[in-house]
Amino acid sequence: MKDIISEGLFDRAKDSIPGGVNSPVRAFKDVDLVPPFITKANGSKIYDEDGNEYIDYVGSYGPMILGHNRKIVNDKLKEQVDKSLSYGAPTRLEVEIAELIKEIVPSVEMIRMVNSGTEATMSAIRLARGYTGKNKIVKFAGNYHGHGDSLLVQAGSGALTHGVPSSSGVPENITEETIVAEYNKIESVRDIFEKYGDDIAAIIMEPVSGNMGVVPSTKEFMDYVRKITKEHKSLLIIDEVMTGFRLALSGAQSIYNVDPDITCFGKIIGGGLPVGAYGGKKEIMKCIAPLGPVYQAGTLSGNPLSVTAGIVTLRYLKDNPNVYVELERKAEKLQIGIEEAIKEFNIEATVNRVGSMMTVFFSKEKVTNYEQAKKSNLKDFAKYFSLMLENGIYLPPSQFETFFISDAHTEEDIEKTIQVVRKAFKNMQ
Image (cartoon, rainbow, N blue to C red; front, side, top):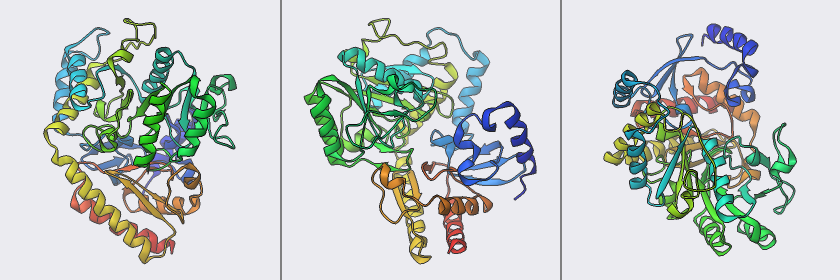
């Protein structure tokens, strides 16, 4: 594949942008390659500056559930562009998306729009502390909730260890109120609440983790987390930035039949444009300014372009439930094809999938938590990624990311991808 133009752009970018990218994973550092610079996309395909075509399983890391360049979304965006890009004032669109999300997600009685998933989780944590009057937050190793200071922590040596900053520039006194528990381990959560229960404002968790690769929580674990937070009058914050409106219309919480106090959203609710939101019970949400003492604001929150794309996307998903049936069918077909190739070519790998989210872990054992995910063979992943990219399949360039199937992926796309997987595994063998 030609990559002369992308190489030149990457060199130029490194002079002006840290690492040449505006989000670290895009640097392709883990796979030791030059990232393709994308110039356009349509349906399930993306195209780089050198004219290469790829079947895209990144989907802008989740939002493009309808595929790229969907006409029903673009037409509405063009209408809004002709009106204006932003007002800094209330709009009908904000009301419509709030009512639509409330209708789709029963646990949400009020919602506040923000501009990113990070803003949503940061704001939800501040709200939980303000509402409960407690300080400590429990998160899980391997769950990613954006780059807010208090959540950039890694697991310590034991379940009761306070978070240690995993990024330079984050003082320890900011993360000392964050406790890291082990994902899918009830005893880890139980021990933390026995020691700190009276001062825990909330647990924040991904129902299905997407940033250590796809790792779902078990139903038993989710039920226990909901039970213990209620017992200690702590809040349960469900981070559905990635899973919301993707795994099911009403999100992962509908699959697990869990009723969270606060839910964080992003990605799909902006239809591909920057967006975030957090919503929950009225009693809790009324603590936010201007009604209550918890302050949060944003000049571009509820931006009419993002909200327009979100409304069109959500309405389409609501009116076309067969989308989820087809996503499951195509994802299952791809999973089976990959697993058959793993067996045929004797590759040490396993597949985790929930709905249209999937990860191939180069691991001997099934991955159910962060410690197991970290044992994956990163050299094997890098080989696999490079071979897939060379043959026109665009995947996230990290073992610890999720790839996504969209409504735009065709039978031919799935068949071609399976054949490329087989070719890659044969080469690796």
